[in-house]
Image (cartoon, rainbow, N blue to C red; front, side, top):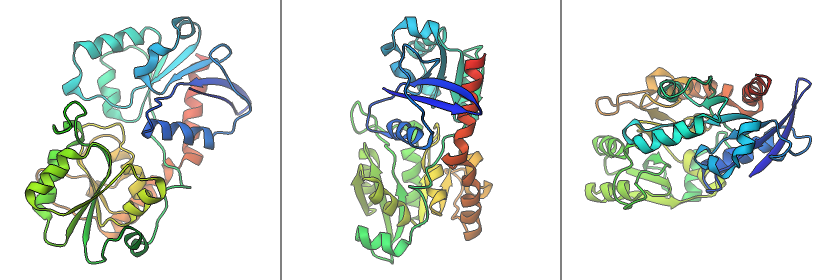
Length: 318
């Protein structure tokens, strides 16, 4: 778990943020927060003023006496309604008694949990780090990845398969919709570029359809940047999301992107690029790409972090 002590507009805050320790996206968000937030010291559970449950599923690792005596902000990243059963409701209710306020990244999650709690809900999107995500030459990226210039490259870098059996689709991520769309638009020049982990469902579908793919599992940042830059089109086909991060990273790199209407899509990319993936076909124009690039700048962590600090400050002052 990490600790931070932030000074904002003369208001000193000692905040304890728990972390996921999964070597996945939340750990990266955690690192970026620490990197871009000026620190003046450290805070432990003993002397912090606020506990930020950034990884809410690990709330039980914090002794209840601290949850009772401190202000508590809980981030709910996303909820898949189809999987929200009695056990999930019971866990939410048990944790809710310790929570003073919630943070969610989008209106869909806010609407869902508003039926479960009377606590204040703050909607603040995720951010992107401009030191990592900025435009890169496609020709250089493809050379580095050994992808020829004449291929039409479609990107997807998020997991799509349930961990229980490593074959069933993780339907919240919409891998079935992704494959259906790719099959409709593919030809002999198509190459699907896959990243991340648990990609078995899409790989099996692509093999069945005879569509070529290149899979780079858990690529380091520099390679992941090259993967984005190599794309002619990035597709987000999710049904439910907190973000995803691709909706910030691809626009920041000027990569053409289309998305279903969920998560933070309406906050970041232009309306043209939000499609009914089961019915529509669309390829972003240069104007779309430029508008998406302009839109995403308001989520630059160097300025966007102030919204988080203001929210933390407000929770403590309550």
